[in-house]
Every structure is written in structure tokens, then in C-alpha cells.
Length: 115
Length: 113
Image 1 (cartoon, rainbow over the protein chains, first blue to last red):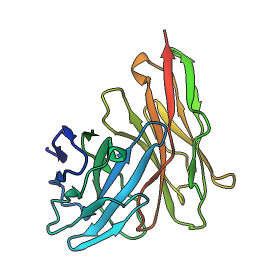
Image 2 (image 1 turned 180 degrees about the vertical axis):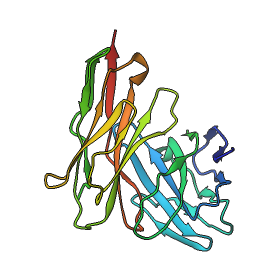
Image 3 (image 1 turned 60 degrees about the vertical axis):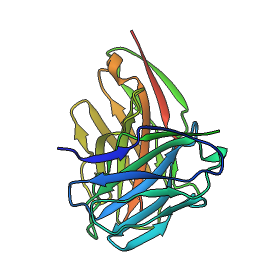
Image 4 (image 1 turned 45 degrees about the vertical axis):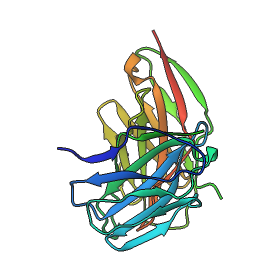
């Protein structure tokens, strides 16, 4: 079982560069989300999606774009990288049914450094 | 307003002893779920235990149990018989209906031999 996969595992960018962090899941989950983790801050939500074609902003969306053209994929785009975006990025997915709360499955993370 | 509060940045526990990690939450939604995740030094997020707001009994999963006190809005994680491999960051999280999972800032647990 692949579960939630993320690529790349590590990335170094220069300020101003753009890139896409890839996330894919093979569990047919409706709900997908992106978090960033910084020391002492826990995991903060960047963007999330409740299904193909539907996305919404989380707590810290500035500087990031997302799209959800398929159920399986939820890429995160950094438009113009800044040193403040140095972080570990996690993608997660879960089933989504009203009235129920389902465990979120996490990818292994992408460690991004912006110089 | 912060929805999940973990007041213990770091905890130490002797091997084989039990330890309680605190978590309080804030919501006005009667339907919600509470989760605990473990993050070892390798970095992955590992789901430990789940408690639904309507569940009558406290959740248990092996050595993990969740001390759910709804009126006090607390959802403390109890780890019994601590092992060296339990040393990790532990995150409490909450999810209301059809909303994203919100995390606390975590507690770093160190198990001492």
C-alpha cells in the first residue's frame, strides 16, 4: 500500500524561485490537506480540499497555491520562494463524511530550505 | 482563538512508568473528534488514538488511552508502561464536522532508562 506519497523528500531553493511539491494518495480519499511544520509551532494548515475541483485556504495560505483536478493528486505550488517558507511540509488525506471524523493519513514530509 | 492547547512543552518519564500528556480544546460544535499523533525523530506522523465527542467510553489502543473529560474540554493521552521507543513529539488535534484538523503545538516526551 502506497498510502500518501510526497515528492521530493528534500529541496533547496533560492529566493524567488518557484516549485511544486507533489502529493498523491491511492485510498480514494475525498479530503486532502497541506500543513507546514516549524519548530515550536505544531502543524499549521496551508490549504485543503474536500474533493476534486474544491479547495480552500487554511491558517497560513499566503505564498502558496493549490489545485485539485483529480481525487488522487493535490500539488502545492510555491510561487516565489522566500526564506520564511523554509519548513517541513506534510500532505494528509482522509475520508470525508458528514457526522464522522476520520483519521488523517500523512505523507512522509518534504523538507524545504529557501536560501 | 487557539483551539487546541498543550501546556507541556517537554516531559520526562522513567521507563516502565505511566505518563499523562495534557490537551485542552475549545469548540462550540457538539460533534467533533479528538486525535493524538506521535512524531518520532524520523519525522513521520503516526496516528495513535481517536475519541469522538459522542463516545460514551474513553478510547483505548494498546498502551494508549485517552482520558476524555467533556465538561472540562480535556482529552489527555495516557501512555502506560513507557518504553524508550515512546520518546517523541506528541500532538493533540481536533476536527469539527467537515472542517480541517487543527493541531496543538505538541509535547516532547523523553523516556529515561
